[in-house]
Every structure is written in structure tokens, then in C-alpha cells.
Length: 112
Length: 110
Image (spheres, rainbow over the protein chains, first blue to last red):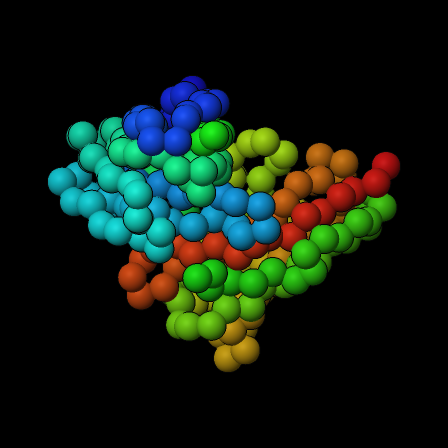
């Protein structure tokens, strides 16, 4: 099925561990985004990539890094996980800026 | 910080009734979008309304936009159990990054 694929779906990390969340889209979209969703706070933008080869910080970038590996793939890395990073992470893509987003099904991350 | 703020936070209606939720925002926008999220799932794009549009329809959805009041509304007509979900407004500003509100949780009772 066409869309945005995120892996893994669930992950438990210990404080200080690192991990990479993977995201791939097969719609030939130019722009890709990483959001986190916490209860009662809606979605907050972590990083985005307006086009292949560019990445920019969003609202809450601290503790994260990203890589736009190619047009299809946009990964999010937690170098040293903290309990405050317990959240549901969503990757999204859009044809270009100013269009609607297609979201993945999310990664539920717990840091203990 | 969140740009859009939805009201009410939660809404419970009977099947067949209409559901209306509102979104207010603070700064100028290029467009405003509405998304639906079913429990445990990703967000699904419902409708996009541009800043020069006042009203838009898509099936049972009707969206209005009043840029002078910096507000939008989403109306779902003839609600069904499958409409039970959280609904989010998202504003697309001059920096072309979507900013989401905290959402309205809609429960449709059979």
C-alpha cells in the first residue's frame, strides 16, 4: 500500500541508550517531517526536510538528530534517550510545502 | 508552541446528529487543515482550506474560515459511529510548517 511506513511500531529503551526511528514514503513526496505527540499537547514538530538534501529544526529539536538519506527516507535518531522522550513519534510527508500531509502509523517509544 | 486551539476539548453526540468544533489561531496563515486520528492510529488528512477561501465541503464535512477573526470551524453532518475520533486543526504559516492544536475528541453514541 502506498503511504508512509515507520519502523519500529513499539520500542522500550533504557535511559542513555540510542536508537534510530526509520521512515520511508513511496509517494515521491519532496517534504518530510517528524512530530512527537504527547497527551493533551497535540503534535509538536521535531525536525523537517523541505526537500532532499535539506533538514531544519522544528519546535522541539533538542536531543534529536535527523538524516534525509534520500528522497524516500527520513530517519530520526535519539543519541542518549531520556524519560522525557517517552512519546508517540509520527513521520509525515507532503508533495511539497503548503499541501496536506500523509502520516505514518507512529512509533510508541517508552524510555525507562 | 501550538498555533491552533480547538474548542471544545471533547464532544459527545448521538448518531445522526451534527458535530461542530472550532479552531482559533494567532498569526497569519497560508492555509488551515483538518485531520482525524482514530485511537492508536496516525492522522488522516481531511480537508485543506486556503486563506483566500471562506468555505469548503467534502462529503459530510464542511469547513469555514474567517481570517478576520483568525478562526475556523469543522462541521460533520449526520454523524456515524465511525466518526468517533480526535480531530485536529493545523495551521500552515509563512514558514510552511504545520502547527497542530491539541484536538477535539468526538464520541458518537449509537
